[in-house]
Each structure stands twice: as structure tokens, then as C-alpha cells.
Image (tube, rainbow, N blue to C red):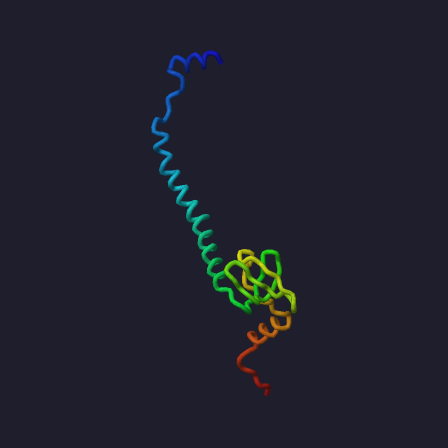
Length: 129
């Protein structure tokens, strides 16, 4: 072990290596930033822009769902606050930023079955002879 330390001390300290290491890693760092931008930052900015457009387009009568899970119909809109009617004569004021999305009621099982049945019916009927 002492021989290795003495040999390193005689050579000038550290073993000879690649002297251009810092300049060689700059293109790799730039490539990592570009990948980071296209995978993470750009889609996040697109979602934020779509969310802002949806919030700006809210109007009286729209059904929405909040981040807390409340579903209601908008009965009033101001700059930052939306008044939701969650049941008859039950109104709640919610910040616009807490509106998650517009709400569309899910179809019932019967409606779904009818829609599937009407699509699968054959166009022509066969006659028995």
C-alpha cells in the first residue's frame, strides 16, 4: 500500500487522465436540458394554458367538479370566485382555481346498453323461406 502512495507522490499527485473532461461534458449537459424541456416543462405549460382557457370560459349553468369532489351547477361567476349550487337552495362559494374540470354525468347502464345495441344491429334482415 505504501508503494502505491509513494508512486503517486513521485508522479505529481494524481494519475494522468483526460484533461478535457469539463469541455466534453458540456454538450451532454445541454442535451439533458433539451430532453428535460420536451419531456417535462413543455407538456406542463400546455396543460396550464388549457386549464386557464377552461376557467376563463366558465359561465352560468355549467356543471363542474371541484378538487374536493363537489359537483355542482354554476349559479354565479366573478373574477376569482364561482358560486356553485350543489343542491336546491344550497350554494357554495369556491375559488376558481379549485375548479378541476367540467362535469358530464356518466351514462346509466341502460343508456349504454341501448347505444351498444343500436350500433350492433344488422342493417338488413333475412327472410325465411
